[in-house]
Amino acid sequence: MTREERSRLIATYMEGYQRVADALKDITPEELDFKISPEKWSCREVVHHLADSETISGHRLRRLLVEFNPYIQAYDQDEYARRFHYAGRPWAPALDAFRSARETTAQLFEFMTDEDWQRAGEHSEIGPYSAETWLKTYAAHAHGHADQILRNRKAYKERA
Image (cartoon, rainbow, N blue to C red):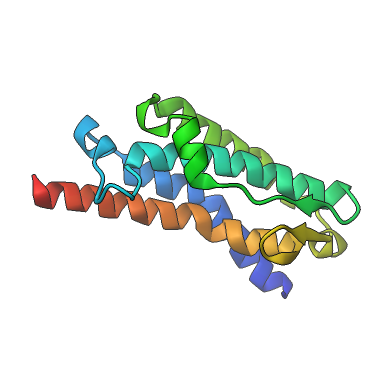
């Protein structure tokens, strides 16, 4: 990955929280809990997922930067949603947690060297996993969920 490619991904990562916050602007309680289908997440559940995912992702990057060849364990996001009661918990603290986790992780980029971006470990599902791989994954993650929130809201309005 070139420095320019990395810079673009970092910019995308940095925009992620705002994209989600904008997608949630003026959301109604009905929109918040609407599900397109039973197996899909509501907007509330997406926000809780982002809080947990961002916390985990920040820890993953920190391990990549500090540990020698860390083992990065995958997790079952649907089990997290079920066990941690995403559907029934207040969502505002989760949105704050997502913002804070993303901001504190983004602060690390300023200090990372080219060598840091090459540091790697082993991911339990995808194999070799570097800081650059991490960035490719998480730069787009929040944007994808912001789009999911907008699709949910649109579907709710069309069915209402």
